[in-house]
Structures are given as C-alpha cells and as structure tokens.
Image (cartoon, each protein chain N blue to C red):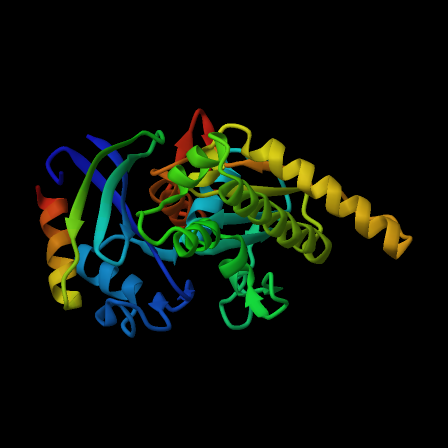
Length: 262
Length: 51
C-alpha cells in the first residue's frame, strides 16, 4: 500500500466509550487490551501521520451527515437497531459525546416490558426483542429476525404480534428522543432498517403514539421526521475518514467535489 | 501517487481495514484478525499498510 498510496492519516472506529480527545477507549469489552492506551498517540507514533478515533455509531452518523441521508442537516439523532440499540446525537453538525461519553446510548433508556417491569429500550425494541420472544414460544426451532418476519407474513399470529410490539416500542423510544433533542431528522440504521416497508410501518406507529399522547396531554406534540440510513457495511469506514478530516485540518477529504473538512 | 486515509473499523472478533482516497473513493478493504495484545493488533495494521 505504501508504494501505491501516500497515507495522509489513520482513523479508527471502535465500540464503547471512546474519548476522542485522549484517544482512549474506555469501559470494558471482550478485548481488554484495547482499553487503556491512547490509540491516537500510538498510531501517530508508529505511522508518523495524524490519527483519530471515534465510537463506531458516531462514525456511521458522521458518514450519513457528510454524504448520506442526513447530508445538510444541522441537528439529527441516529438510532442503530440491531442486537441492541445504539446511536448518536448530532447538534449543530457536531457529535454530542456527553459528560460520561454516553451521548447517543439510546439503548440504555428506560422502558417497561409487557409485564410492566423495568426494562430498557435495547431489550424491548431491538431485533433481539422479538426474536427472543418467539424463541421462547417455539424453543424447538432456531429463530432469527428474517424467519420471524417470514412466518408473520405466512400468518403466524405470535410472530405478527411480536413484530407489532417491536415497532410500537421502537416508535415510543423515537417519540421520546424527538421530544428531548428535537432534531430535524431521526435516522434509522441496522439490518432491519433495510427491510421494505420498515420506515412506513414505523411512521404509522409514530402517528398512533402522537395521536394518543396529543389527546391525553391536550398539547401539541411533534411527529418525528424519520428516514433510513444510506450506508450499510461501509458506514463506519466512511465515517472514520470524515472524522479524521474534521479533526485534523491537514488531512483533506474531498468527496464529489465537496470539501469534507466540515 | 494517490493520497488518502487508512480507515480501521475495530470490532470484537475482527477488524475491517480500508483505504479512502482523497477524492472519497473507498477501496482496498480487507478483514484482519484481532489479537490479545495491542502490539499484535498494531502489527496487523502495520502489515496491512505495508502490503
């Protein structure tokens, strides 16, 4: 690569509480060695080029903000729905990391389960929420999200109900995010967001919630503006480059003739 | 010689590496293993860069 390209910089996206100032990945994970040292210091020392690091969901949000579905937006929330729920908060085109680096960790929001017990947004509105439910109902089979949707379409009432609850819970969380941050756009990511009709179903659930809340609170509420993300598997890598060009002015990234040293 | 950025997406079981050119083209991607020590992880990145 060194013979073919001139490397202007190096960027990393990582899971967990990433401190972009120090370059340290906080918290704990399955890979203890990644926590502690400054990645940016080590990369700059080793490769002799400017380096940056950012949380993976924040990288994906930066990719969407610079080149994707949130291009040109000032304020947005990015909700990634997978085996859990993660995300990012962007205000005035800047990622909001927060005091404890928990900005955008929507999965930690409190939500009640079907029995009224304390639960989280991640447990009640991730793809795992309905897969887990169906797996418990039919333990003799191996379930995943695709199979639950397929069975619901074939008329399985349990699968249909589990998916309906999932969409309602997801809409409830999105409604709350809207009224805390009040962004121009709430962008949805994760494998399930690529399903046909995903955004339409979610919009219907949001309208249902907005109608109910508006009625009982007797106040005007906002219908969240939602959309699905543009980038898929490449989102984090694209965001890594956008992040580096934003943090290190000497690293220039020009995409489609536009300057992304934003 | 084309200029650009080496991008690393670190995951729990592997990492994805790619090169984004200054003009915004993402190419030359590959999956690299992650190891138990940071030094070994940096060696993987090192080898990817030298490749």
